[in-house]
Image (cartoon, rainbow, N blue to C red; front, side, top):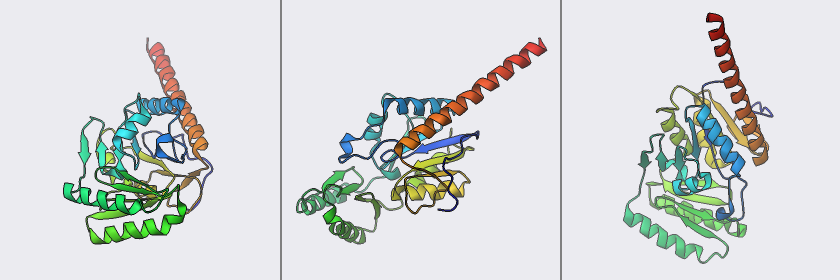
Length: 266
């Protein structure tokens, strides 16, 4: 990380927002099913989307189905499974898949391997697999070796390490590519990208945002390509509230100026 500012900038116009979920909008929990986005944070996200013509997307390793459940009742553009599945502002889905026979083979092989490592968990995502070891960190090296071995056997697969998890997914799929795809279409095109994330999986997104002269924000400590930093999830929530308040103030000022201009002309 180069120069790190305590709080990322908010006083800018024409922004497009991208948020990771686990460890960014929501606290990490012992089990993924325990994770939630507080209702007031969901409302802030919707306000921010409304004030920026819908240019706000969630970018996560979770599936789009999970993201919709966690964001409900709101409905945002999404990139799930690190971008292997993506839904644009029109509701159109873009999905990268693996051969069904390969998915079935991998599922059986991984399920058998992880059954020998108590406390680990396999999460099947259709076109990707997450090997969780948060509940059994002593198996970290075995999990990594297993995933690396499978990725070396199947050249169409890529490896994505994360916090107490390693994922096998289609090669070339990452959050940076997902952000690039959004930035090439309405309502994101022509705006300055802002991406907030906390994990190794977010570094590809930080890289792309930096290339576009955007605002890359790392949540928590650790080496990163991000240019700004927020301490933790509560700090993200506070920054998000500040951001919404700042944009609401600008909108109110523009309306007042418009009324004053109209009054003078009359």
